[in-house]
Length: 383
Image 1 (spheres, rainbow, N blue to C red):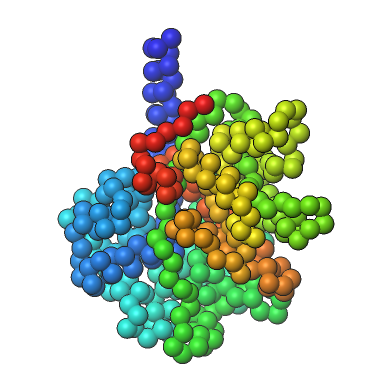
Image 2: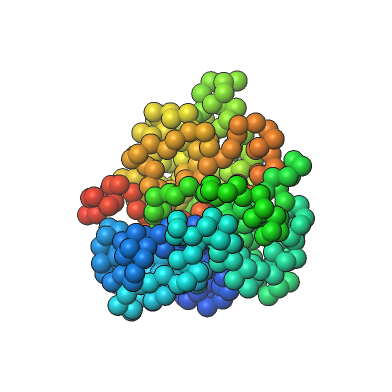
């Protein structure tokens, strides 16, 4: 029996390594959105005061292992975006000229904006081609963008990821704007002309963490489940309407390509004690998406349980609400629900943001970092 278990483990490891090799060899664009490598470049600038930084010193200051998969991806993606120079074996990491221009507050804001747009879009060949094809137009449907991505040579297995990354990058650097009630891809000149002098396009955020899918459940039901932690409330209440809107408009459509069934607590129909069933879904589902809106105490309690098992998490929140300190270092998708005119035009890009984070969370080489895993790395939970 032990021999069979070992053989099965080796087979699974081989499959994982083969999948990672396939993804790395075929992807013609960075394996993350632009925001995370940009924050990494800001850390290089801050720690090194604009000069090169010893690689080991850099990751020590960031509280990360220099040899981890997450650290490796930070270096690789930052390099692919043209923000930094120096690979995993390099002694030092330094900013490129364009990278320095993109993050240095002493550089005029319009020049910083121009550098970000160049690094995130026009310097990445597939993104440049998509941008040139659709600039000046309303953001096309996701399926249309996928067809265009395949037409320019992106492998079909990576088309959805490429489109999601492209859309998120456009929005982050200001090339995707809401005009006349729809999201439109604008020209660089239009974006720069609309940038007020002396203001920043985006506020600095804490370094986001990376995540890895560690599917420990031996039950197929949980391996194909995303549990949606959300403020539910009574029928007809604002939290219930909000949760229903996010679930039906953003979360479920974003998860369709991953073949994950979304379960919310009020939809559990198995017999038994409901609290126990909720905890089981939290602890064993392949993915959890947590909506932090309304600062609901049940949501934070359930999120803490998920932190303990170190399994994939994606966080969303209304843009008007502040993410509490203990979880604000985890990347969170902010959704503007201030009115229908702000929300409706951005639905497609919100779906892309969720899909992009889900895709990364489920990749085999991603590490789930939470306050618990950082400060109690040896802690484990068994079922």
